[in-house]
Image (tube, rainbow, N blue to C red; front, side, top):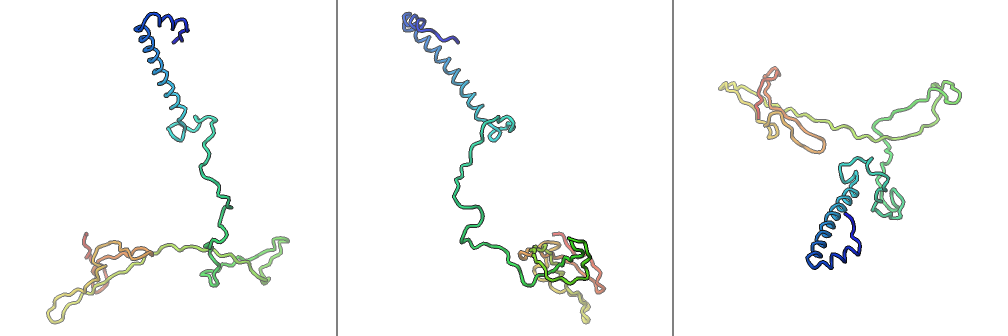
Length: 194
């Protein structure tokens, strides 16, 4: 659209009120169109790879926003007066692994027969893997010599399920299986689904 000159605006004004209203209305339409285009361009320029699906390469050379965190003035790491929780060396470790010196690192003389004058110690603290404890509950099966009827011992409540996990504590799970054994010890199918 071409911008009207001052002389053209005055000519429209002299044509009367209706001509002026039509002219101003057309200007308002142009303003609406331009405002829409401006909004669209502002929306495009506000998008970057962190707030849209655009790749980081499309961000251009614009600087990333600075971190909003403020420096506290303290050095990094533990602060003076903090109790800390460093592991202390133990007097009696569970395992000792000796790394023997076989040859002199300076002149390559064999040192296997030479007695050590001391040792440098370092301790590694490892958490052992969790081990599963299995408790097999066995109920005796006996035949009465008088009435010749079979009687089975009573299981504890934890043994009343078929293969299942029972949480005991932080060490892991205890698995129990309900089964019957004959006097010879071979397994009979006594498990039930459930």
